[in-house]
Image (cartoon, rainbow, N blue to C red; front, side, top):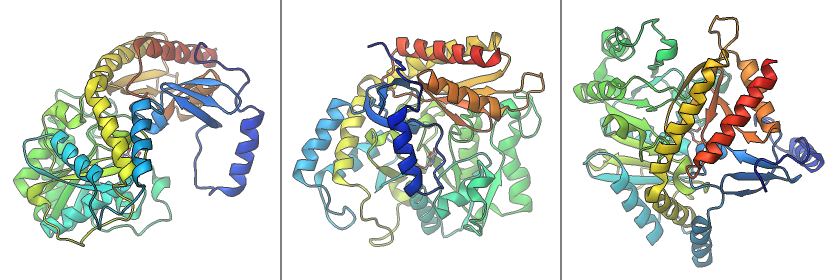
Length: 441
Ligand code: PLP
């Protein structure tokens, strides 16, 4: 059957019934985007409980890199599940954990030897990095960026600064976190123009922050997303990450690169920092690592991984079934999906970029690989972000059979599984354009 295929306007009757039950019993903290109730996923397709078929350009928020329920990943999960489900990798040994740690240390960018700590999620990878950075340097200040998203547990939330609502009423958070502006050229925080700005957003660290607020010898780490995800799919200028690395090296500060969203082929390279030839001191990953099973990792240079047995641990982190899923996922990603992300990503960005000429609401199309953001603005020529219109577009696209998500103030993100074909990308662009057309009438 042709996909998408909308049999009944979503949410249909079965979806409505489940949503009602869900809302009665689940925490009101969940901020559901639209009323999609998933029954099954296959590759690029999501089927809802009323039999509607959607084209998935969310990948469950940049997670299901190999598509939904890839047979090879399912097989690896089944085989491991028949052997044993759990035996606490913090306290004992098993082969899938050793194998995955070896694989990740080989894949991580840069020539230095690495040590891996496995977690259940992205936020836990960040927590581990925060603890190791303090432990190793014996310093406690850290620097993060406005617009960043590093997670929602209290340590990572202290670094997160993408929306004040994430932090409201949860303070006081971890002290001595300093936030500075990110390299968001489309809306330069210093009102400068790339080419003549001298990358003021990075220079600010040494020119201002280290002189007026915190001495660099007190800073343990700088946490940075190589491309901001939740903050709006913001790609910084090409010099950006390398300049931050230089500052870290000058002052003995650890560079922690958060590739929870950008990692594992998403941007058309295995890791986004490889676009700019930067080796992090600590690399945090999760999301795409295991095709949807809960797993994350903190990959640190061996020489800074100085913590001793018992200083950190986890009951479930590095679960053997999740490790088996990750090993199968990484094999698929290495075997063609990184290349596909680069090729189809270029095509998709090009096609979305063409829509700019027809729809003045599109102010920017940006991204690398299959991490593409389309920023929407008011049509009055003011370039003011139009969050309301963005939300309408996302909702209407869903009703038209295309699943997309928002990020930043008024951006739509396209982050499909890395298996997406050019034809599927073309279909997504057609539905997106038709949706804009309907809402622009
Ligand atoms: N870091 C980045 C860049 C993310 O995008 C996310 C989640 O969206 C996280 C960390 C937190 O990951 P998790 O939701 O698995 O805790």
